[in-house]
Image (cartoon, rainbow, N blue to C red; front, side, top):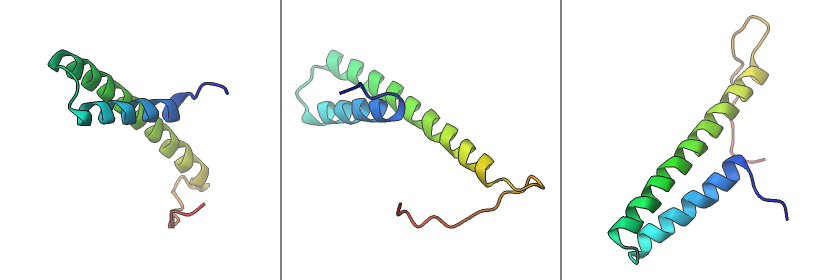
Length: 76
């Protein structure tokens, strides 16, 4: 199976970091390293979501540069 890239990979790493921190089994130094990596992964996720939001806005932009907003019901 090909390695996950981008948002999905960062989200997986972030979830693992949260689970490790919640376990309470890490030393203080290990916790700090895992926390720092989690912050990095959260930033990657945030940037990916922002990029997708901009792409969606471009797709919805009308000829007069206004956005046609549509309600999203959460189902695909």
